[in-house]
Image (tube, rainbow, N blue to C red; front, side, top):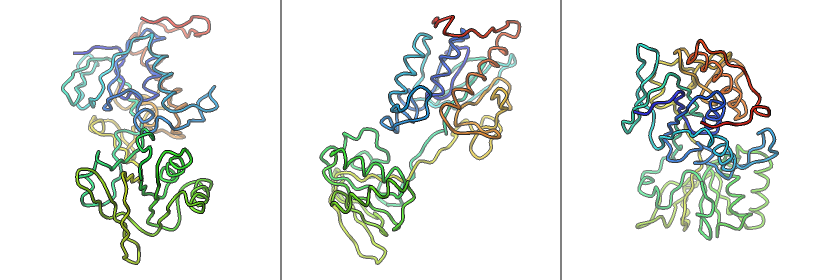
Length: 336
């Protein structure tokens, strides 16, 4: 059994910052995350994505933000249970909690802070009958490392920002040998600037654009070799490729947490904005996973929320101890 003062569900940026703020209060944290690495979406899905709204950083890559947050948390020696999902919860008579993971690891803590972002993400997959046969064999639903596609022939599907931006990136950075963008409509949903960039690259012959069409079949032996595209007039085009990347977005789900008895509204946990507590005493929800009047789904808002949640959590753990706010510029950072 793993014991801690604060059990954090979610190792994304807000979860990692929770460790730092808890450490200032001398509270020991342990983090559970279903992903095999810390960092949440920032590390797993878009480590190279630029973020522009972190105070003090005009621009920072998502992966670099995670690296900095890990360094900031390091003095407080958090524990990590990665690659395991928090599944079952039991509230004891003394008000503390047992949480058991998908691998059977049992955690015990008086306070739980859910910082699970938008929850567990599943890619939106196109309805191609044999697509599962090529997963990890030429079909990727997200782009983690663009270098994977160096000198490869890539076919991207989608009409949103991800499909547009990655098509542009792979071409402008001279990474892919060829890029074909397939979209079922003649219009796109992305930013106008990105749409115009794609059309400019099409005119220059650097992107092969196919609209009003869909990839409907995949061909290959042990690895993907070809995609088949059906046009609205029912004609078929076969395209040789090394990778097919359908970028149709991700579906967020709360996962097992949705069964914990928390008040849920539209796949988000309802909280009291005074301290971001849930309807279950001792459980807080911070970051994109929560909802309340005026909620903004921004990382910096999550940082604020977890700071206030921890002040409330401290009072629950130590009801007879007064917490005096001490500025780090005066008091410094002291680990355990």
